[in-house]
Image (cartoon, rainbow, N blue to C red):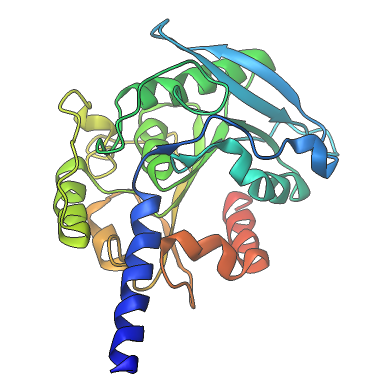
Length: 273
């Protein structure tokens, strides 16, 4: 009996881990700032292209001057402060980084987030605004996008539609709103609200329906047996050039933590090809 209960608890815990990667849980207060870890950064305020919000962002310069920039889009669970270790890994690999908070998160503008809503189309505008800002500020023609969970899907959708994008690295991306509505219902027993105003061309499943000659590659990172998104689901995203299945990862929320050194070794090797 105890064995059955423990297995049930493990399954429930794994589902919970996976759900949080695909649910919106905004946190306003930063539990830590980069300065705590002696990370030099500049805080910038970025007005969105729709003129409805101002985004808070942190910019980090690599130790050696470079024109290589990565935009980090987080999972929508917490805020950007939760991803400083990933930022530092990019910096150590020689990349400049800009990370930002969606409207409604951290110190970005107020925006009401309904936790029963899967994603907001305004987040597309948020990423596009950050891309436009860093492109103009640093006079860049080519930029890499990295995203986690909700941010991974956004990175694919925006990256496929923006000619400035060089590489996309997507850790546990969502597939499409229709697919995710079904999968989340199966995993949680709940039906999340899906935005009807989300442009289809920005959904990962359909983002590559038109040619994307500007893209060098799309790397997707996935756990071998996640209860929501698994490697077999990735066949619906046409533009993938490399897949990294994280052996030993209990679910997509654990992809980075499973082996951080190997994780970034794979990511950096892909980006430097």
